[in-house]
Length: 121
Image 1 (cartoon, helix red, strand yellow):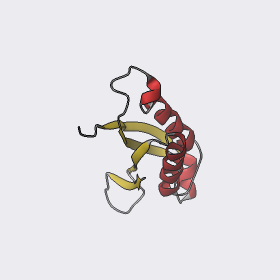
Image 2 (tube, one colour):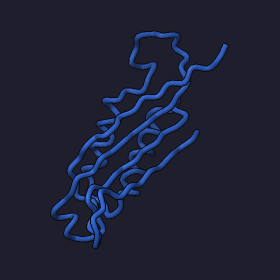
Image 3 (cartoon, helix red, strand yellow):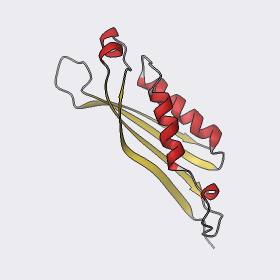
C-alpha cells in the first residue's frame, strides 16, 4: 500500500498592500500576487471532515493578515506567512509561499519581482 499525498493551494491571490523599501511604496502601495501551496500525507481514508485537511480559507486569512502589516521587504511578509502556516498545520510536510510584486519601481519595464520560500518538515 502506498502513501497518498495531498496538495492544497491558493493561486493568484491578489492584494493591494504597502510593502516596499522606498517611502513612496509605503505611501502609494502596489499590487501583489500570492501563491501558497501545502503538501501533506492523507491518513483519513476519505473522511469528509475539514479537520483532516488544510483549510484554504484559513490560508487566505493568514495571508491577508500578514499582507496588511506594512513591511520593507516582501521576504519578511513571505516568512511571516510561512511561519504561521507551519505552526498552525503541524501535519503539513511542505509549504511554499511566493509573492510577486507587480511593476516594481525599477529603471526599466519589469512585470514583477518574486520571492519564494519553501519549507520541508
